[in-house]
Length: 239
Ligand SMILES: [Zn+2]
Image (cartoon, rainbow, N blue to C red; front, top):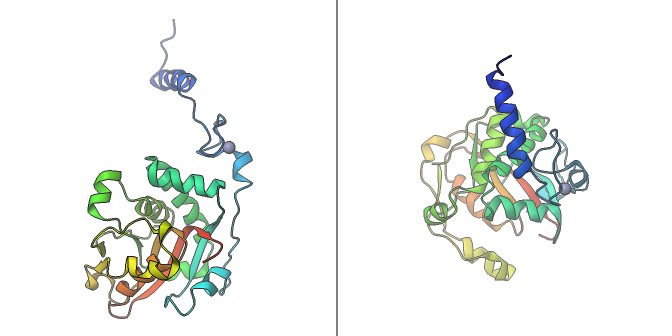
């Protein structure tokens, strides 16, 4: 009798595991086929992409003009209320789906690879999470995205440059005018020497008011001859 090799045993074990714990789509919970990863194709094709290409002056850049001294700004998806992107962001942030964040980061990286300006980026910096919240959540969702981008672009991820001093209350209940106060002074440039003369790619999961990115960029610009570009997984329509 032929003795099954290790790979066959692993295959059998995986099939058995999937029988009891099938991988399902993050959005619609349908069972995924072997070519699908985290999201089924049916859901994936309906996710609203921004189609921001390599041309400057996309609609997100226009919304942030005059507030953030950026080089370029790019977002992968449009955020719609109750839509699939909101569900994906929620799962990455609150449902312990680090791997989904990494996967989305890699997708962002694949898109960013097509941009000419990406060749100028020296390092990737995620919007930091406060230490207490990091301990509670176990990971920083922006770092998961940043790691995925870093893997795809082979550009180093730096998490010690920017720090979060305190954690702010949820922004959802704040009126726009009060939001700026809510993030003012909460970030700190811990290692200005690391970004001297560098072009930094700042990563956030979603742009809503833009005030978090504004506060982070203000700190990064305290470094000498620093340039900042921004990439986010999603952007909300009404900034
Ligand atoms: Zn689905």
